[in-house]
Image (tube, rainbow over all chains, first blue to last red; front, side, top):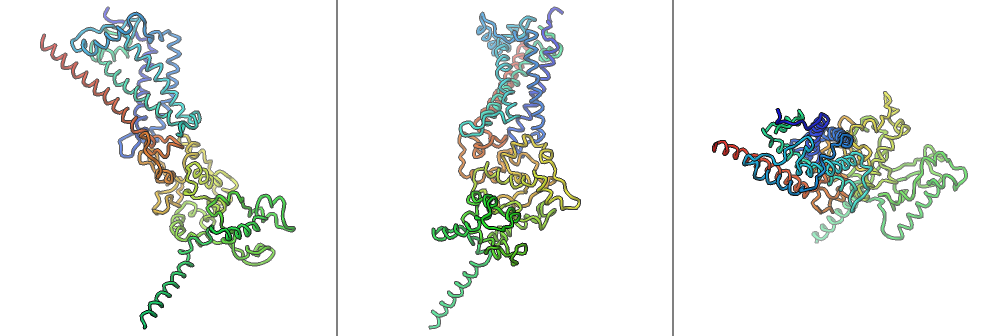
Length: 204
Length: 336
């Protein structure tokens, strides 16, 4: 069994699936709130609001756990783009997705215990986890406690920019989620990477 | 010869009829309304000055006449500044306060000098409106429980009240109108004055506790009126808000009534500013934006489209990519 390597400790896997479940729940309820309309088949507004509040708070708490655990375990290093041909490695990865993958070429940078992510994953995961998620969570918390919002911005209620930023960030994260789930099918077998996220073992 | 005379007779009868109409309640919608000519204005100010010499907070502390019934006076005070902003501003006190009120000392059943002092009912002037309102009030939770004790002025203090059309600004409308509800519903003393007389006596429910289900309760109360949810859709075109106040069993609890593209706020609280709104920058219900961001109602159509198109493109992109992968894999298999 030399063709497999253990790369994901239990806490990362638990965090990942809890995070995934919460994001999915928040996407469904968030869309039901934002596009609220009695004519559309959405989750009822009152129920959506309750679930979105609770799941949002849970996501904020989980994010805090994620940051602390990353610092404590040193896992944060995985997200840092490494110098020495970073752009070149990203380009190779993009070329693989646009061409090599269709010809059955091997992954250019398969994960190792030291480097879980390829360069493209590093930069995108870094943006999602350390830029978009904080914006999403902070704007969400202000939504929950609107007294913290500015009173007025450009002649409008101070919640308007908060709401727009929350919506835009959510759109980007949902777009990432769709691409992320799809790229999960690009392992050795369609199910390999999903299995890896459960067992922690990556099959080459 | 007879014809011109007949015409004159018909004309005179018509004039007489018009005169009668003008003095009937329907024709008296503007009875006592604030005049425009300076002479009458000065006359009214002089009359009202006589009343306000006693009926203000200041006079209570420094009674202008000896031997006044201070307790009775303390229950009949007016704030001239508020009155001058009210819808009845400019009207003479004695337009409504008639009979024994017109002289001093006042004559009345409770006064030292016996006589009849009376205040006219609202429908003396507001006949048409009262006709609609009375039918709605009769179905209201207040009428069912309190009937005779509950009149227009229980909520609408005629010395203070301003209509929404006059206030225009939603924040001011909300502050005034919710103040009318909360003056009883947040005061054990005032609530007991009405509810305490019921059998069994009704204790004032904690207003925060019974609305705990409503997210950001305080924010809602500062942004919308109680009657937004506690009245049905008005059956009368000329009255934007019904006077049928609904108890908690029948009150609106469907959030999307306001939190949606076709928000009821447009035709309710914001109807006086909604007329002037423009769909600037692509916001729906942009008239509301100056005061509140209302989830579901004030979203931006450009950003909505951008978001949906982006997510749609990503979805289409991965579907296309997956399809090509499947076709390419089938192709490689057939080559082998």
